[in-house]
Image (tube, rainbow, N blue to C red; front, side, top):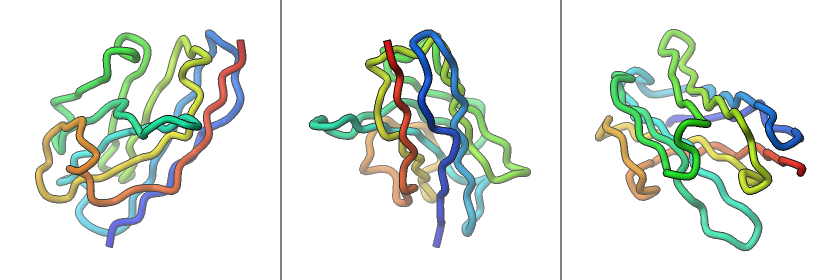
Length: 125
């Protein structure tokens, strides 16, 4: 069973940066596709970014392109989300997700079979 643990959330002013981390245990991390999703109060969970098993392919939602970067370190079984130029609209609980079977990027939450507990990101104006 894959377990995912996020960290790195916090409170930051608009224009600032944060780096989220998600450490995985169980399974074969190097075969996973990974993703970050987020959910704001009263809204549905939305896709943020995804990275393939090889790290050679990434996918971003339009609103974060050029500001966020997803990366993975297979030696540490960790996926990162570097968030720059943060905006108040980025305020949400951020969730890490893993896909053990397909290994390719996806924006669909249905593709991912393991989820972390989430980490809060709050951006003040």
